[in-house]
Amino acid sequence: MAMLERFGGIYPALATPLNEDETVDEAGYRRLLRRVLDAGVHGVVVLGSAGEFTALSDEEKERAIQIVVSEVAGQVPVIAGTGEPGTRRAVAMTRRAAKLGADAAMVVPPYYNPLSNAGVVAHYRALAEAGDLPVVLYNIPGCTKVTIDLEVASELAAAPAIIGIKDSGGNFGHFQALVQQLPAGFTVVTGSDNLLFASLAVGGSGSIGPGANVAPQWFVGLWNAAKAGRTEEAWEIERRILAMSAIYRHGGFHPALKGALSCLGICKPIVAAPQSPANETQLQAIGAILEEVGLL
Image (cartoon, helix red, strand yellow):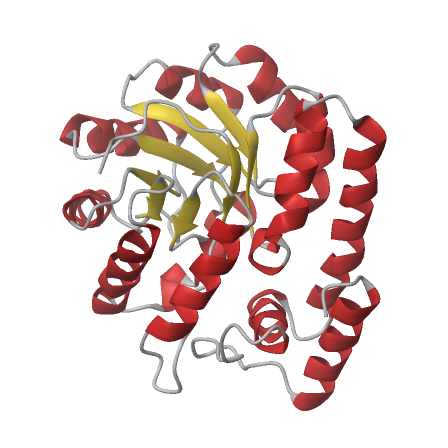
């Protein structure tokens, strides 16, 4: 493990392949990891939103980190989602991730209870002071009910142990403000696949998103094209990503993502309860979309 000081590029927010009993499907996980690594991703994120972290037991979370760290074997950085609804739990989970070999932690604000800006700052300061891993802030107010606003992000960016932010708020103006007003060297990445091209155009550092599970080669290709100034090529790839995103109309986010990976022969379409996997009709529709965009 080598702790991150900076990061950027394409980091798939990995799905967590599951068996019927909701234990981690190790073989499927390793197939998924080989797929994204072969595509040239710059790092991976285990136990993000796409990884169903809120529904997994502590034991399965640890197992997921172990599998990812083992399969990656130092080729790229591993960021582990360690968000919890309480500060002590988040600190403890971050410490476990560090012991298991993660390079950094990605942490949502404590969810469920409303939280003031002062509470958000105190939570992240406790994580930074624990000193176990560098911390990536994760703004996803649609799930947490808490927004990491510019004022809070600016205050936290001054802490050396806090190295960046993933913004999944869907507000591009907010994303732009983060890029423009946070200190140089503080990483700002999008969590919205449909905003990757635009985010890079305004100075964003990359993405941590779900679509790179399904078409990692497209996301890496978009990144490479954008960095080389090949704007038309990058925009054409974004259009393909947008077309692929139609899969989410069939069963919802996790069922559709797992359904797509099932169609690709990576893992089973199983999702953690209480969600239901994509049914046969939905799987057929997902497969048809993948075929139409050239992924099958």
